[in-house]
Image (cartoon, helix red, strand yellow):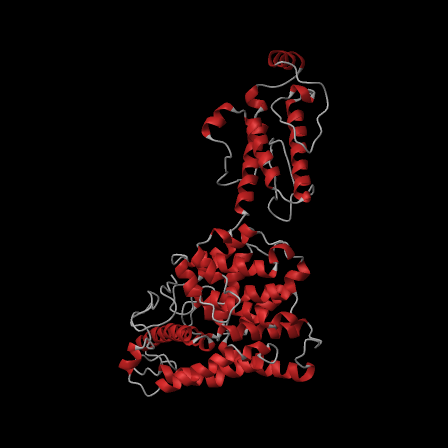
Length: 519
């Protein structure tokens, strides 16, 4: 007996397929989970094992719908087992099949074992025990597979995390949230950090219930995405989680009023996957070197297109597809938002994005009553992701400085590669001409602050958090422009000397994190 297409939207009658095994292939349930101790297995028949596993499945199901569907599985198994024996024995002679509370049992009390065995042997057409039990062995395998899937779907229990980690996680809705501090509290485990943060945010927005997202599937998806992030100084898993949390903050701060639940799910997921498999190099570098990414996308936003391909390739896998419960129309809307938002994260699209949004808001205004259509919302989601992507200079200065060290380290690493190839060295990538404070002043004044000022028309609260810190940090960076390099190094402002820049804070780095560790 085998059960097919389980773990999707349910185990309905149209999805549960059971066959006797004669010429019918069985699914390969890898890593089947036995619910019995070895001593118990030696004392229990295969049928008893199958029904004991099925009973456990029935106990862990919460919804009436799932319980009803499991009752259907049980009834099909009982019926098929009887047919396979070709004995047409009454139920009271089939003591290997414990009754289910969901299926009434009719008939007289079973006779003593000796009498039952005699009745079976004399009045049935059963085959040998070995032949008859083929179907039962297959049922055991299938039910164990179902139980393993059920265990996998439980996901992370946030309450099981260390108290220090829970304290940091509780600040996930705040502007000064520190992803490095959370990672340090979780022993430097960036995968667990990702699972904890994404799970908590999904709980905040009710995505598990609203979109039937399976907790175990979300955990596998988050872990898979984190593994695609390379250990770059800046474009790493910690950066993805920082951008994800910043979008979460923006939604809570007021952006939520403009978006539906589906649109919130789309922009948050886009934030998490927006730099998957980033290799720490710019689009210009890829175009100059005719890299595989540039060739695959005809020099058009090679990195951003590659991030999208990487993310949606993961989502194509049934075990990772957290959107499997969405109907086609909803998935099309979600995918459209993710594609447009991630493509707009290409810095070369910065001024085009702002110009398009200016045209939109001039025509329709910025009030919550504005009649924004789906394409308008895609633009707003793109602005939110892009703003979060460049938000580090607007965080409290210890965090802003730490992120600056990381991004400048990555820039210098690229400059070294360009020097080796005798390419013109890209702006801010020449480690022989460091100008960290000046670069931050220009970035804040001409790129970051104007973007936040624009978004603040929709999310007024940003004026008191992001824009306030941008003004403070601009003053701080301006005060450091005349400092010698040696002094800047002692303050922890200069880039890391090693190429990775991910081995922890150096002396003089007063960031609140003690163990950045992105690898």
